[in-house]
Image (cartoon, rainbow, N blue to C red):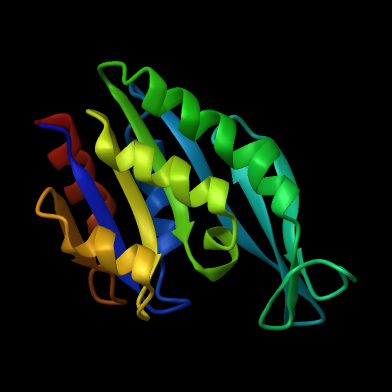
Length: 176
């Protein structure tokens, strides 16, 4: 049975750091997916960049994206999800190879704005492939349904456990 893990936590607790460190520890596995990172200007957060595990990067959301769909104060470029995030997720779920791991950072409001992304995530979680994803702590119908799945392990990320989690998760994924 594939391992499905959701890493839940509040903003800034270290979910992305856990996922990046986990990916580095699993260098022998075929890791597919993406991480997100803040864009800061003068100490203030002004947007987010998405980076695939293959190194492709693009600005996902920014305060200066006029005419883009808004999530909070950020305009979201849904084309970034379509061009960068979806191909790897769709390929991984279409051909769930042994040893492959899907990493998704994150299942948040900006990413979930894309219906195509939600469908790709649903496919990943329904296939025989290992998946680790970060997820926001607040309630959302899509992520709440994932959290209730019996085949999903929900792990709460805190400042107290964020440094030890990557090693524990890597051991769990390597010994399944």
